[in-house]
Image (cartoon, rainbow, N blue to C red):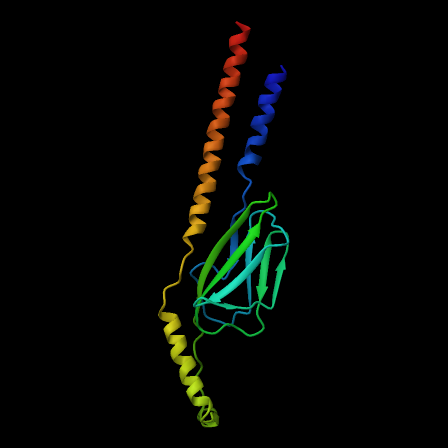
Length: 190
């Protein structure tokens, strides 16, 4: 009887052992999204609770853009910048520790494509000679940035694949052990 109770308790705990890792449930911006308005905060929501030491980093063309604040709540992490992002390609990288202690990381590539507003004639004449080269340079740089393809982090996919493979193998081994245990119990009764 004790063996049957043990086997039932193992089966009851099996779903909790397999669901040890958390996943991204929602993000702002979403992966591959083209943002058409000013963006000053980014948020990544997870299916499970995360630890307080979780972090976010934001990069544009391999140049890190410092985040002014990073806030970690139960299931989400929020990063803010004081100046809205300019047009270009960005990668938001999250690094979390799930409540079960497993460290996970991932990338969310996105682009900012805010339409340029037409300046009036008076605003154009107000641009000084020293500002004109800077304006031309930043416009050319933003055009170059929008033509680049976003970079995807392939290690995140392999980590997810490895963890799901491990979970599947663990479930199969536990089922085999359970069947073997039941077979041993019934064999001894004969």
